Length: 166
Image 1 (cartoon, rainbow, N blue to C red):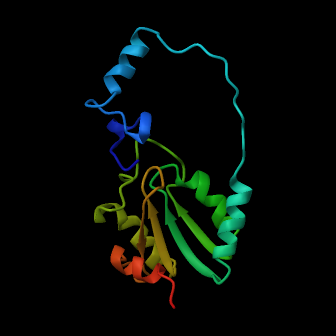
Image 2: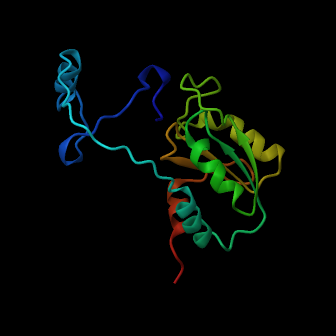
Image 3: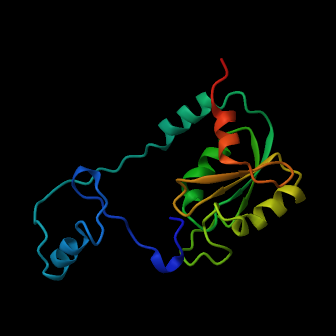
């Protein structure tokens, strides 16, 4: 996610969608692993590709976008895996920064909420005379936007821009 590389790992979610933490479940999981006490049942693995359906939805909601130039900073996180196929299907001229996933985050932390992690994106937006920039966190569930002048777009302004006009 947006955490530094020494905190990379997986997040475990328990019953009722409660995150397993030291105070709620993670020690029990540790004991199961150490004692090799996993439930031994047979199951099935089904592979599904939801990307085509997702692309249809994205296209339906982005029909008015025309010829934008966008710089995207993936921060060496996972965003490129899902976002690049989407951007390739939109009428965008897109430039990518740090798209190769690398959990050591060699270029900067994948935490776009900190201005120091937007320096490269802002520079590239200005250099390419792009319309906007997007910086994702490590697991691409958060993003920060940069305007055409390299200024950070405040979250409340972005929210206002996304609200449908009546």
